[in-house]
Length: 375
Image (cartoon, rainbow, N blue to C red):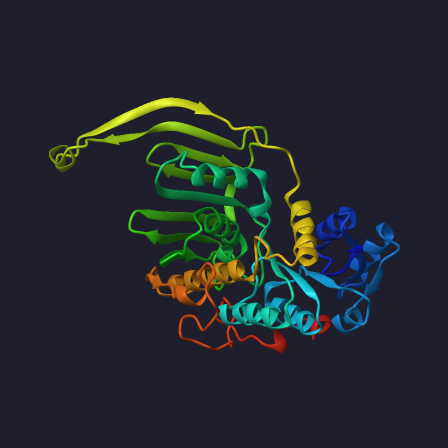
């Protein structure tokens, strides 16, 4: 296959990174960039003078492209991605896939109908450290997982159209989905808003995966320090993934508890403590986003299902939507209807709703929410 001709939609925060990586990938060629801002297009044009610069999706779809990468606000993802899929293009969408479960499911079904690749840019799934964690879990290095504890906090960047859960939690939810390979059963969340009373900037999310596996996620825009850490605690060993420690992002601890084997010992809670060595597996250096764009092109070329396909994106959106519902219900636990979007299941309605009339903040959605560029 000759180089895949790609158009980039959105040249704001993430768009330039996509332009750079698609341009560097030997399997792809960036043909055009679409954005409503003349200033942004002018900036892109100074560095990439050979690109077609357009300010509407209609203009972009008239160009000879085979795929698009969408890096725009979440509220526009459905309208843009569906337009491109209907035009016969393969689509890579920045996380999260859409603003509602209904929209996300509709995109998955449309991509399957048109036989186009739909992939979500859950970049952490292409991080070599995360891949190593998955290997260690699958090979039984940690034993049975007891819990996962994640902290993703920093000072800003505040978003105007999504709360902190929709902004930060997709990273951790997608990592856990990928590593566990099983469906979440229920979710409970608490959050509060300080800068804008309608947008939570601090939240705690608890996800139940089975009788003995819980995951907790702390996401926060108000922290004076930046922390990116996940703990995977198992029956044999535990692992800490510290993203900010670039030299040794993973540490495996041979520390934990040992329960008595007899019934009487367990009844009396006879617990022993094990303290062993700490080791740091070697992690190859690599740029995850370059792996994302290469994988996207390879899936189109070879007819493969992406690692972060639309179904994974749908599962993440369903959890984000449920978390927001739980926050509105002051932490009420939401049971997830996994039959509609589980690992490998056929798509159908989830949560019994079937409506696409509100976004994650409970506000109306539709064409009026889309910027003039995107209509």
